Length: 234
Image (spheres, rainbow, N blue to C red):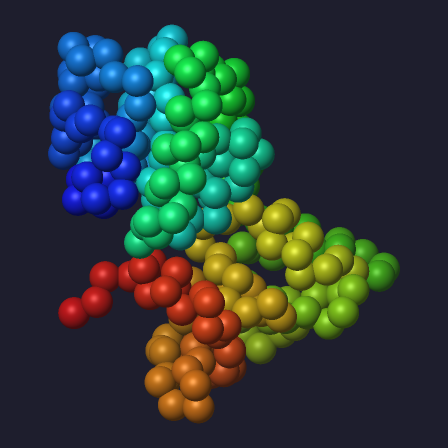
């Protein structure tokens, strides 16, 4: 990040680089920066918790994160700037340009809305069951029992452990939004997979994901980088 800023955003002067939220809080209070690049996942305290300790926010924030549907849903809802890892130089330059347009009048209400949205999403995620709406009933299942979901036009087929599947009277896009869990990943326009229920990635035939029930799920070419960024590899 420091190298990219130096290369592509010469108007940005780096006055501190911190390896933890605690260091960041101290540096922000002492240096009073105009802009903070803030990672979400940090040791001991995440970026959202860090911001709670810095209220009121009087600086611009650009969040950086690996692909995380939970965080990205909150970012989009509140319209704050975020960069997806690995960070693209054009996205970085555009985010910095947007901050420059604030001219010191940072939209604090966006950060407040973001923190409210994060709290709401966390509360919703405490419930581990979801009601699947079929044509004639509601079927309650544990979210972790969902292996993957497959689009069938205006319906979605939900594949569960123990070989069951249920047709839901909702589009896959709506199912993805309603599940709102960081363990689910849109691997393909027709497939939403539970990352906790994958077994293998096969390189043959253009590459595909093997799920816990041995189903083969295609992965879009533009999704591969996001997919592999979610995992540590040995």
